[in-house]
Length: 224
Ligand SMILES: C[S@@+](CC[C@H](N)C(=O)[O-])C[C@H]1O[C@@H](n2cnc3c(N)ncnc32)[C@H](O)[C@@H]1O
Image 1 (cartoon, rainbow, N blue to C red):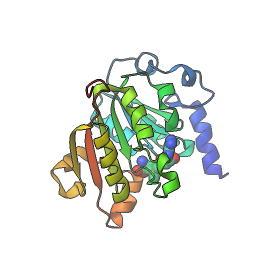
Image 2: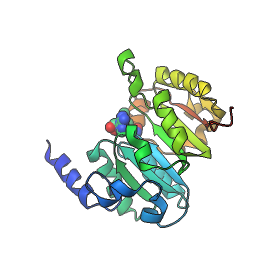
Image 3: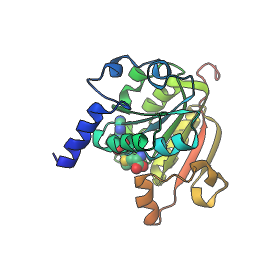
Image 4: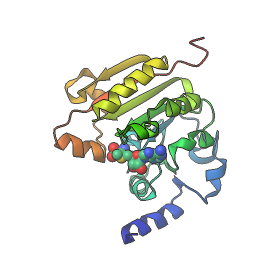
């Protein structure tokens, strides 16, 4: 393992804004993010597959009245966002190192008000489709932790993943849907708050358009 990674892992163990295996709050945070970590009652926003957490940190600056949690399985990446949040004195930022598969172990029903999914791995091979973060298997988890008016956002350069997601969300009774295949040429441009993730920068420099959607889940009993 590289020295840089080892240093970042060591920083995570000391960082109060990083929750990972071995830390006391990691096992006991479900339903208590605001009481035990943020010490306020502000809405909670997640960035899934956050990588270095560009949205988590960027949105936290724009919206100090909300709490932001970046989630990724890769500790060396979230260490970067964690450090930036410290350097900027942001107290409304945290990072959770886990597989998103286990989201419901960390968030209670209705605890989350908004979810951003930023440039997730497309997993285009048929045998890997279940690993897509917008597979129904994951959408069900998001719906269960979100409050009734909760907003879901997706940004990706991958057309196959985007179309797949639109289809799956439609089957979920997703509502108030707004979407574009070219965010920067659309009326929804303001929705990205001028923030570009690392992967977004790589893809836009290569000339790929950014696809974006947002909308709300219907509650399970709304459709009954
Ligand atoms: C293509 S990168 C995008 C990172 C960042 N959002 C960006 O746009 O720069 C995808 C990220 O998703 C994370 N990831 C993929 N599947 C995951 C899962 N099931 N649970 C947690 N993280 C996951 C990877 O570790 C990786 O950091």
